[in-house]
Amino acid sequence: MSRRQPADEGRSVPLTAGPRWYRRRIRTLGPVFGMIPMVVLGAIALAAMWLADGRASGLIGLFFGATAAPGLLVAGAPFGDESTYPLAVLASVPFWLLLGFVAAWRATRRPIASWNDYSRELLYLTAAVAVGVSIALVVSAQVVGRSLVL
Image (cartoon, rainbow, N blue to C red):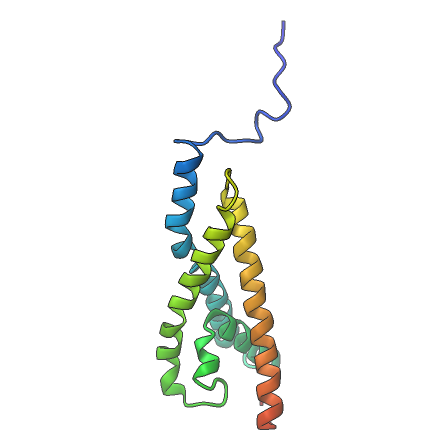
């Protein structure tokens, strides 16, 4: 006689130490995991700049680089002095830690929170940064009157 398994048995994973422990874990590790988009987008920007030498790769590198490190826009990228770029990238780290904290806080407002909730909130915040960066790049190109990529 075969025993029938419930339909949702394989879909949910039980919490290790309860909902409070899980929420506290998301709130504790959330800011650190907020750095993941910065690292991924920065790697894409570096790969685009190193692997190709053209207008499209320049635009991809600029967009993803400025999204990964919004401090580059404050430092005047792509028109500013390149010696300030490493400091601008370093100054973007607290920004992404703050976004990770906000995403963790928003994801754990409900009694039962999961890492899926956290990743969804972080995705929304990262998309907002990308939209802001694209607007800033378009406005800066219009104000300066030069092409972003020569």
